[in-house]
Image (cartoon, rainbow, N blue to C red; front, side, top):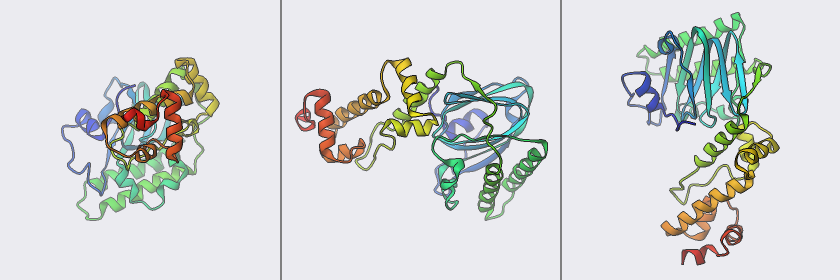
Length: 298
């Protein structure tokens, strides 16, 4: 899997400029035509996690590789990618077109209750196959976005958020494209890569106020949209270790680093590493190294 693909990476590789407002609290938004990017010989979008949201209207034959699934869109579809889920887009054939918009977390957060929608639930990477009339409806919204981006209207980003909401609501009325799920060629390896990527994303711990969000196997299974037993079998097959063992080893490694290189209190380190009670952290550490965290620190 490639390293996380940032919005800065996107602009550097696809355009000749990097917008100045990528880090501002208002958030960043932009919209593009697919035809301006794919060329005559379409290349696959590399398998990686993006640190931004992306909504795409893709016209053409495509395969989406995600978790242990390969989802086929034969004619046209709309997809919703979020920063938690790595994926790869494989373009089949030369007839490719459509639109896509990219935006940051800050842009999305200014839409009330947006994270409560099913389309943004952890582990979701919704893809919807579209009929011809539906393609026209989604295309109209993207074309309006392109028009608004050229305007000097002072409230245009509020209007663009409303258009993003239109895309979301139109899609949620449709049925996700689950009928065209194909069997992945290396499902276990892909799940393992996704798991490791999600685990590593939580490190290094850089502040005593930072805490692991994914701490137990069920958390990772939910974010990967696989059953916990499926995740465990895939990891056991590729690494010889269980999900809990892999999480525990990485947590122990980070615990040793924090104990050795910070002056944080034991309770603060326990909190950062997802332990509800410092005594549980001490028991975990002693079982692994036959030392208490305090004794290890010396």
